[in-house]
Image (cartoon, rainbow, N blue to C red; front, side, top):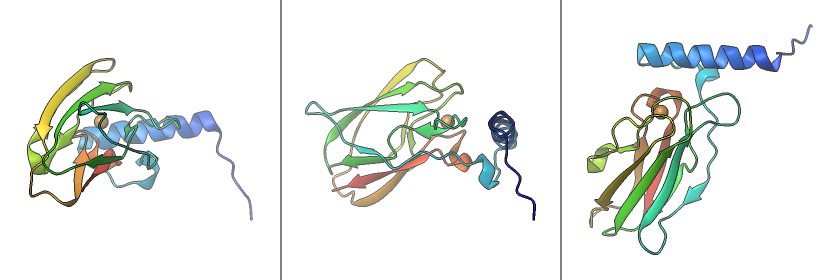
Length: 143
Ligand SMILES: [Cu+2]
């Protein structure tokens, strides 16, 4: 049995190409296109500001949040400063709470302020609108 080693540059080109194709088609479930975004968590500072980035995954993909778990408290006011340090346009969007930055260009920062609903609990999903299908999603853990 022959073992094939992918050359890094070829693999990166493939991942990027598939990502573009999937984004253009608005879908795609090819596992090779899914970003590996990690599981880092964060929470707002004492003044309610939460810094979040739309960024790359360090492996050639461009469709990650730098934190994929946000720890929020029911009833608290949160200001998300969403910086796009990636290459493509990204959003920070919480459908359940009508929160959306709109498309943010590479290098730009968008700020959105919202109040976590008093009756919220458990896990709420956030995502980037253009790249949800590529795994650019995260979880808000409400306590
Ligand atoms: Cu995105």
